[in-house]
Image 1: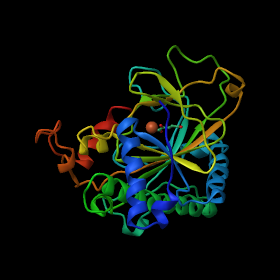
Image 2: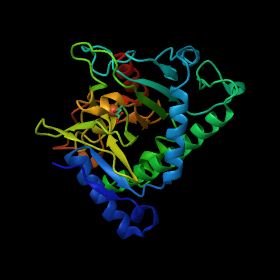
Image 3: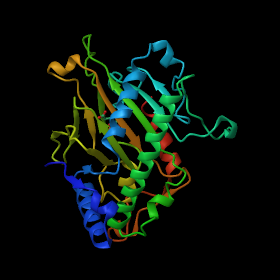
Length: 310
Ligand SMILES: O=C(O)CCC(=O)C(=O)O
Ligand SMILES: [Fe+2]
């Protein structure tokens, strides 16, 4: 089993027929493995390089500075998450990674008790504007991918995008530091998990290390491929599609070669539908007119998943 590489350009630029053809390839990938590499996703390699440079800058800051932006709760889900803080596999020791979460930017002036704001470093406007620019680019890419999903699943082309128009997405910069101490028994870089939302866009540096579990149970390597972005389907998309699209487990293991001495960086963009979007089995995915899950609101689903890992 291999993770397919799909050229997305014909979807962005093409006519109805080429868009259908790309949507069909995406359907196949989501159905068989839940992961794909999208080539020509509509983000320049310069922009990707620039955000990785900013990420290195951020994680190189002293811990006390990063801790000023500490993640505080599942509802806001913003800010800095220190090493070992998150357990993607709840019965294992904490993951050997640190992360910085950014959500939709709202000015503090507009913040209300229900609206959470991002945590930024003082006097780092360049960092903030580059991260936010990347956030918006990812939103646009995600909208295109969600249109392809809609075509693939025979619902109106704007079916998923209208249910994501509040942009409840999270951009996550990730750093896996070099391993300098003996890890705890069972400890890994990112424990095996499936993502919670609808789709995830994932960018990784050349160090690689991502592994994806095929249906056979075998773990297959998903190395970085230049000029591509990894797209995978999350639990909510699996639920929406009655398991026609699969939400596949993936993990990052501690390297067993010289890469153990190196930092690894990756960037994930987790797409979440509007909190009040009702996730009800799609008509094209019903089998014998039945659905595996009852309807749930996207917000309720996300909160229950986040609470299990912190
Ligand atoms: O760092 C990676 O390559 C994977 C990260 C991941 O799967 C996640 O944060 O959900
Ligand atoms: Fe993940």
